[in-house]
Every structure is written in C-alpha cells, then in structure tokens.
Length: 474
Image (cartoon, rainbow, N blue to C red; front, side):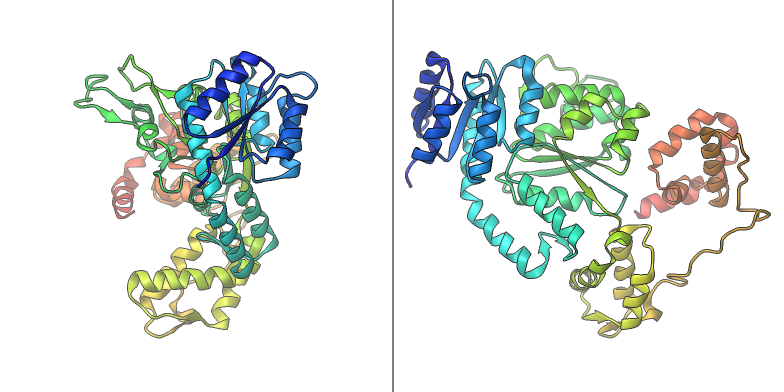
C-alpha cells in the first residue's frame, strides 16, 4: 500500500518544514502549503488523504480552508492546529467537520496518534459505505431500527459524526435508545476495535464518582486500599459514554472539562498526569439548556460537549417504526430465551400503535420480552400482554385521594414538592418507583427530599425493604 498523503498548511516556514520532516519520518508522504489559498489549490492537485492546517494564516485562514474542503469532499480528514487561547475556534472547526485538533506547542506523540487514527478511519470508509447500503435496504443502522423520517435523519447524523473525533451530546427521554446511538457511533468510527465504556453518572454516589471516572492511588482516601484505574484510562483509544451527565456533581464537571481540553487525567492522590486518547460522548434525559439555567450543568462543559447534538424522539412521535421495532426485538428475544416466536397478531400490533409508550423503546422491549416468555406458540396474542396493557388511567376527580390541588398563586417549586410527596405516598414511599413515575432519576429525587427537610421523609422506611429487593432484582 502506498503511504498516506499528508498536506501541511502553515504560514511559518520553520514549523511547516519541521512538521513535514516529522510526518515523513513516520512513513507518510508529506507536502506543504504556505497558507490556506495555496493549500486549497494543492488539495485539488495532489489529493491528500489528511490535511494538517493552522487556523491563523494570511489570505485564507484554516476555518475557510476547512469549509472549502468539506464542501468539495467528505473523504479528507482535516486536523486543525490551534493556540492554547483559541480552543473555541477548535470547537467551531470540529462542528464544521474537522477530524480532530491539536494545540501549540504540538505534542508529537499525540499528533502521531491522531494521524494513526485518521489513517484507520480512511481504511474503514468502504465498510461505512456497505453500512449505508444496508441502511437504505433495511431501514436499520447497527442496533437502531426505524424507516421513519425522524429515525432516518438520526441515522444521517450518526453517519456524519461517527468518523470524526467530535464530542456528541445525545438527548432524549429515558428509554429512547441514547446508549444505542452512542454504541453505533463507536461501531462506525475508527475506534470500533477499541473499548466502549458507558457509565451512568446518576447511579454512582457523589463520594465515589471522581474515583470511578479518574481513578485513585492507594491511600488517596479512607478505604482506598489499592490503586484503581479510572474510566478514562480503561477506555484508552476507545469511546467513553457519560450517561446522565446532568447528574454529575458540579465540582466533578469542572475536572472533567479540564480533561476534555488538556487530554490529560490525574488519579486522585497522584501527582502525575497521564495523557489519554478517548472520545467522549454524553447523554442526558434533561433539556440541557434548562439544566444549565438551574445550575445542574456547567455552561462551559455543555458548550464543550455539545459540539454535535443528536436528539432521540419519544416512541409516540414515530409510531410508524413500531412494526419494524417489533420484528427486530422479537428476533432478539426469541434467540435470547430459546423460543420460536415469529410475529404478533394484528390486534397486538394495533394495541401497540394506540399506546402512548411512556417508557419508550425500553418499555416496548420489556413488554415483548415478557410476551415471548409466556407465549407457547409462534404468534403473540393480546392475552400474552401484561394485565391491563393499553388501558388509559382514569383521570382523578378533584375529591380523589390520589389527586393534588394547586391553587392560583402557588409557586412552581411548591407545586413540584406537593407532586413528589404525593407520588411517594402513592408508592408507599418506594423511592425507586416514585422516581420512575415522576420521570426523574433516583439521585434527583433524593436531592429534592433533602431540600424539603426531614418532614418530607416521614415514614420513608415503610418502603425501604421493598425498594431494596426491587433494586436487587434489577
């Protein structure tokens, strides 16, 4: 195989020559250009696979060159070089389609890693094109299924962002498939043979989350009996998904932001920083702008993570995908449980189409899994669905014991408090179930109860044993 062609666009002659000699020594075929305009001309004449460009140049700067390259071809990996004080420009470049960025003074080890990853990306393009053909033929992308217009647009965004190293913020209600999107992005990237690690920030206690993410040294704190490798180091060269990023403590968010910008991580109790090469994806079931306004998500971290946004719609907004989802999930569940369930009856399909699916695709999966287990034949009938499935709940009257009254003049905070306490009462103080009904995380519910004080938790022990047993089952 001939060496990859690398074009270096830099107005400083010494830096331009030095970079060309360096990448040539690594086995690449190097060519240089003195500014963006010269670079654009050489892209057309020389057809490089990779372009390394400075951002600040006369005649045509790096962003304009990137825009022209992106308009001409999606097959060139562009790496931008930026000064420490212009990270915002690097983020803008990533949004415009740059493969990656590196800051001055250039870390040669990191540059070599970026070039190797970019080369791997080029080798994966034929496979990506095959995936596109499958998408057109079957209406699926990886584990994601859906021929609807909304899902097809999501597939297009995934295809667009997967080959880059850009951070992606995946939003949407619980159960819509945010982790599946992250896995698909990883599987379509040049990092697909490397680790994919997902952690749920809402499921880790605040006292342990920094240790989980960054790692710790032996003796770093009470109970640290041995060294622990954090998620960043475990996901080296791969992809890390930070699920429910809005539940991460603010202090930890500040440390995460530094890692994202410097690409270096320091274990708790250590004086040594370790360089990491990890693509970070984040997911949240909150509206990010509202989380920022409420002080739950740092504005600068949101800006850094939201280089690219993919929003997963609730299932009720793309009901036309239900038949395809049912077919795919039935095949998966039948294989999992050793059954030969082939399809569902028309009555079941109609029930599915008419149901609101508050738990989204996750609820559909769970419903079908139960039906596959109880079904003894090849077709799932309505009798195999959970008791009462699809029946709309009766709207409570003003005198109903399960209703709450909110008068004019009641603050939003007070109305929220009443709703949370009433929901807890209806679940016999089972906080796990209450959180599911309210559509919030268990951690958020605990934080709200702390705000309301001890009176809000009277009788909380009533449901503790049941909640613990339920958590154990999960």
